[in-house]
Image (cartoon, rainbow, N blue to C red):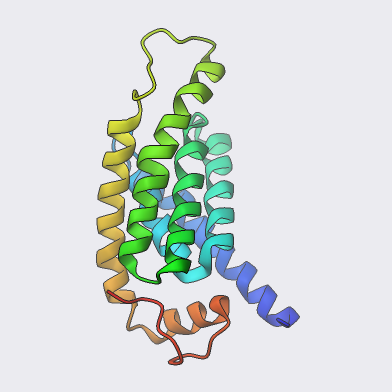
Length: 181
């Protein structure tokens, strides 16, 4: 059973990841794409697992909507990407499986669910169709996943990253390395 100190550390790391995501996403934004959100999703689930990674994506989406005026697309893309990246990473712990989950969750599922959400949000279906958001969401997920791949290759050997990852996955450092190629 995790101690109060461990739970506090997990919440602190989650808070730091949320802060980094909220600050970095608008800085490295391409119109209609949020590749930095995909970067943070992949890193977040590999560091903290699917539960905390999905919470991170949800809170970041809500904060981007409230603080930056981003439409609900901030939620439809990020949450499904983080959830599937985390599930795929938990089943097969490699950076490639997290990247695939991010691509599938954000690029395909998130983009398709964005159509009905935005049709409801704007009150109009004019000029929109089911695959309206798909090219941009796929582009952002692919770009972000490859950037995350590069970052994760560097972080895999950083002792602090390994210790934090071991805390979230309840293993001893060196017992099982989750970041594999």
